[in-house]
Length: 93
Image 1 (cartoon, rainbow, N blue to C red):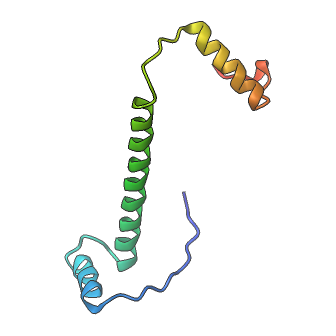
Image 2 (cartoon, rainbow, N blue to C red; image 1 turned 180 degrees about the horizontal axis):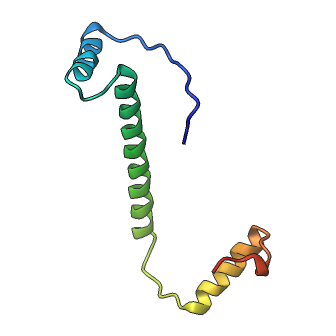
């Protein structure tokens, strides 16, 4: 997948700039931009993980577990299809 690239100028203290240049010099990254992109990707992953953990905790704290059978799932699917206006024939199996 090819992404459209754009630029962003960032002001850094000298010590941070030297640190990034050191990471590039030791071969960990090919450019300072690659280093910063990787930091941003990792931050995004971390925040997504935090959101997932919060959602899981919310589910765990939502009350006692309720057993659901095939009929219950079929009702839920019908309601979702109605809500999203998906015809019965267009459903995925």
